[in-house]
Length: 195
Image (cartoon, rainbow, N blue to C red; front, side, top):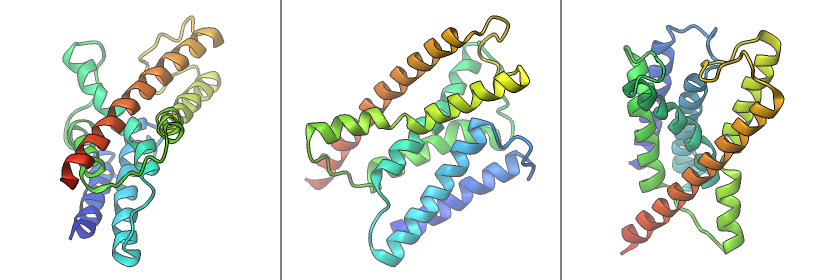
């Protein structure tokens, strides 16, 4: 039953993306589009694999996608504190505020993680930000070509390579810290569910 729910929820997430962006792919470079789409696809594939092979996809796939969709969730705080204006109308409310917690819930309660050693534990924490860092690199390369950042959270007037590198290191550290917290929370929930 869980696998069917994963497929249905994955499809609903994809539908929220398509409706939110009005079936237009001109903004598919935005992290909100990418992270929600990947999350929906991951849930669908995980559900199908579970139905056919009675297995789950590797937990690391969730650990790559979660930092991206939770970064999208952090936009909520930018709006609440008045730091930046994001679109929360219609399906964008789901993409920023609801979908991240749905994916997090599936990760916490349906995915099984087997941490074999301290090295494996640390590897999971420090490689989890990889997808988010690739997006940040894409945004920087796009900035070099267009002069604009995707969300404009950082002033582009004096954005040098060194400043971009510092932003990248800080972002990596915050995502790694979040990954640490998510992994510990997952292991705690998994331990409690086995009792």
